[in-house]
Amino acid sequence: MQCQNCWISYAHNVKLFRCGGCNIEYYCSKACQKQAWPSHKQKCKLNQAFTSKHRPTLTSLAVCALELEKDPKRSMDYIVSIPVHTRRGSKRPETSFFAVDVELQPIDELPQEQAEEMHEQLRLAHERSVKVGMIGVLFVMLKCIDTGVANIVPSAFADDLRQGIVL
Image 1: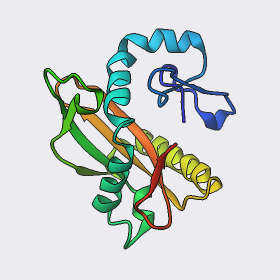
Image 2: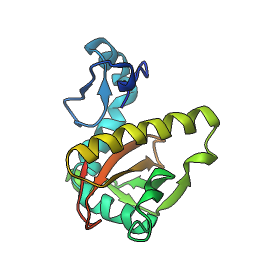
Image 3: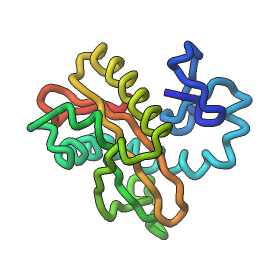
């Protein structure tokens, strides 16, 4: 977990709080949240409209895509990327976007610094998930093709690999 504006990390013993709109993005202060709002606004809509309504489905999809029933540790090596499009004219938040694919992005193919940060974030999220009785954590990235807005959501999974919670 890290502030989505200044990128200071939970690992640095900074108290972070979640966006009141989407309840997913983290900030270290009200000032950082306010400064990030212009860029977070679209992501907040994606989080509220799609991610929060479809968390169980996204987790199940990611578990299947990663074949975690064969090897749960694969969740520490890949990001499950789901490109979405906006659905024009949708009046309901849960139908504001539609998924067009699912892709597995090996973390180690990211630039070294980004891969190291992603592995550290996964490690911290894994520790938190184990504390609440889960067996692992995975990252799902939703990327809106139309706007370029992307969001990575950590999702913990249970022993039966079908039930998950978003951290």
